[in-house]
Length: 377
Image 1: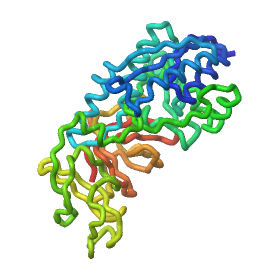
Image 2: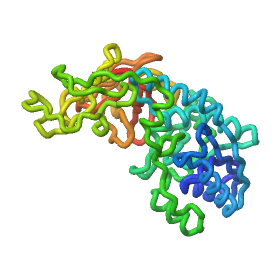
Image 3: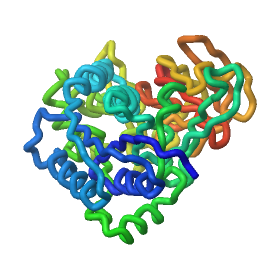
Image 4: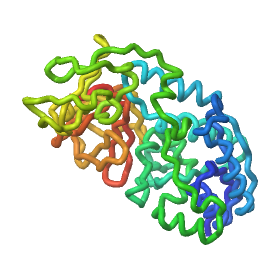
């Protein structure tokens, strides 16, 4: 029988964290719920659901029979996540705030708070797994691996790749072993009040509001030319920060035809954002999904974080990488590696590799860690 532990669960108001708490309670653990408030700039807005989420989390805690505490991490969030998020956008990159939020808030500020409450472990509703491996070269003779969630459609290891050995040693992902359908079934069976609540899809702090309108409040924007791959001006952009590589909608050049395009598609092919030239404030667009400007074989990533603290070696076999979430692992070769930077080469070209996003490396089901994409070609 599993040893009873005091486990603090991050209750978000969603069904995954609710079922996680219930599973741990069923296993005989002492479970405490924490609701994290990470954003309060416009809490009364129609897009910010934190008030309703807390009511849902409190209702869940009541049904399960556990205590819940409301903790405000908004100041930490603004300093550690949002400021970096804005810096990246201002520099023309496209950051992934969920990766930063997990590393800085959920598994740092929240973990520290849980430890002050006397917790032995924390748990969240992420679809991922932790495995302990005997390894004498690590503290306590154990190395902790971050594994993909068993449901391939819900796996969230990509967003968790910055977790380290100390964090993983204290972390549990109870639903990582289950398919989402089973999580929903359990929630329904035990009559959780949020059993039918839809999954949130918005960025972790701003919800599902119109993104450009939100960024506009915080970033200065300087309009400039939109040009095609032959240097012809097609229109004006509203500020480079508001576009991401591979973007198809909202470019603002609908109806422009590129008759006789020499490469990458014909007259009726859609336009995609392909490059951002910060020096000249120019947005470059190309026609056709498979235009050469959208295909890259190599990338360099920095701001590295490795789950095992060491990272893969140059030429290590069996390594794959994702350059964006919801992408199959693409076979790649580590062609250079240092403490600060790693170079990857892909036999098959990757589509719209985007600076600011995370390149996350895997060996089978094991997430090795990764870094922030600096450049690609």
